[in-house]
Length: 265
Image 1 (cartoon, rainbow, N blue to C red):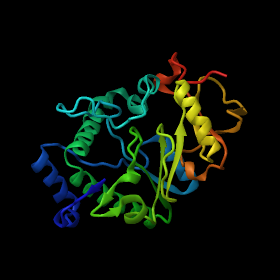
Image 2 (image 1 turned 135 degrees about the vertical axis):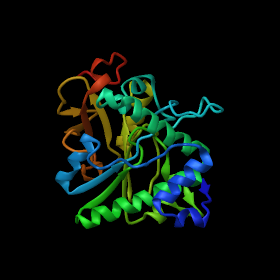
Image 3 (image 1 turned 60 degrees about the vertical axis):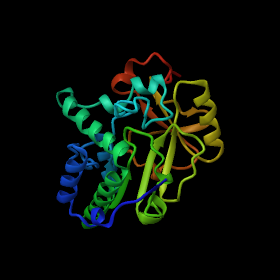
Image 4 (image 1 turned 90 degrees about the horizontal axis):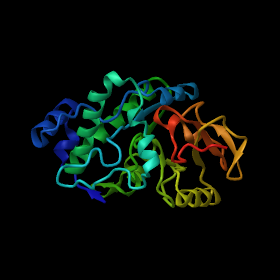
């Protein structure tokens, strides 16, 4: 999908662009990317000298506009993953404000992709510059609570990930199989509770892509015929060896999962 962004939007300072977003959409969007230390798991990437910037949207259909109630930013979502979604993780005292901010970002994505991507490009460049100043690698996880195929977007005719940001590193978890991404966009398939997802996970391992699995108990040594590594050590999947299952311990709502999303072995 090609997104045409007017030159004046691309030239605006951040404050002016945010004012334009409020003026033209009525949405109070303050930022797209969260700070590297705002997400405890991504903060663990610092041990690898990686400064990671996540983008949190309202998952599944929580951010659907009123005139498109079936719109979703998680096309591969299952009942189990929706219930266990990390969207609800964190301090409950901040949940109302956090949800409102994520919904505003998601509504902007549906309503004005030109403004959404203009702000995203500005913030990605700022994040990369911050990492350079600290002599660290920058990494961007644009689907922290969504599953958008960013490799499909072009900005004024240029592929966003493969061209505009070809020198930067992106990574995501996904429930969409058979995706082909540029070398700087790393994906890991995330297992869900369905038989279809299990077949897709096996196929992803066969094609050389790693698989992430949430386990209800202690991590096994092996699963799906592949060695299991501790995925809670850090979040930076580009550093993982090939041919492994990234094991994650059930957290939050996933601890009480009865759907099979959290695997018991």
